[in-house]
Length: 58
Image 1 (cartoon, rainbow, N blue to C red):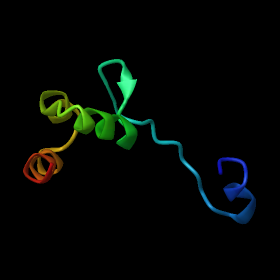
Image 2: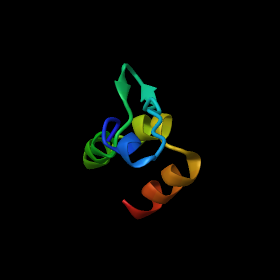
Image 3: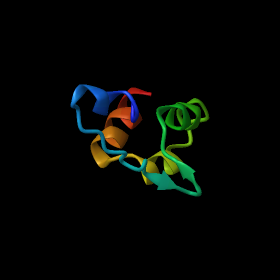
């Protein structure tokens, strides 16, 4: 995307991914923690509203 979009006049800016515990925060990581019911770890890497939703629904 970084090479392709500017060819069409579209500005492109890379935004660094958020990191926690030495790794990037990804949906895959959150799903794995959720699978293991590790809500303490989830709470450290997601916004409060997301944590509240996950805790209530999983």
